[in-house]
Image (cartoon, rainbow, N blue to C red; front, side, top):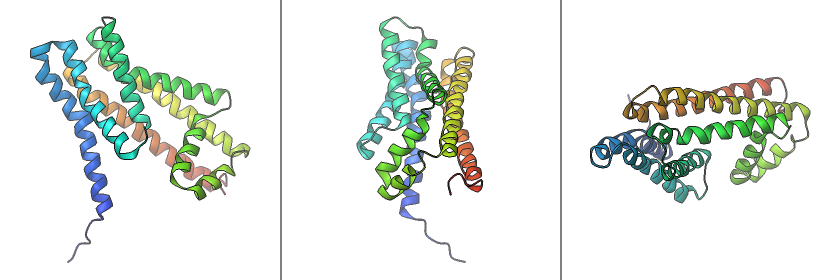
Length: 214
């Protein structure tokens, strides 16, 4: 029995996913554990932000664009620096990405309420980078009421999801030891994104069956 060789593209994606998990899960925890005895808890938490920041910079250099996750990571690190400068507590420093996520969630919900769903803006910008043909097809739906309603629902659900993630992480950060939160916190973030992407896929398929995208 012969097995079909794996595509180099699939192998590359798996390697990149593995590296992303290492830089965003394992290394922050290791850096914190190693640094804490030498520089104290607050400085160790700050140091634990270095691997995710390095990964975001690598991704930017590789793709030549900043994705949403990188924005949240870098924005959270910026908040950490501000909090440190103002004498922030270790728990507040751990809330860095969560505060950015919550703010993005509020913006998403607000854009859906005023009828300017950000999901449409983000999808349009992404398609313009990938394919002119797909982008042109996508733009033909922009004035369709059912399509705009679908974009509004997607934007609202993602916004509520981000706000819910912030609430969960807020509870965890004040109930877990720092080392444990550095492992569990990112899991909550990735799980939230995964569930939202799954819901979006299923919702899009249902809308296509109803003829919204026909």
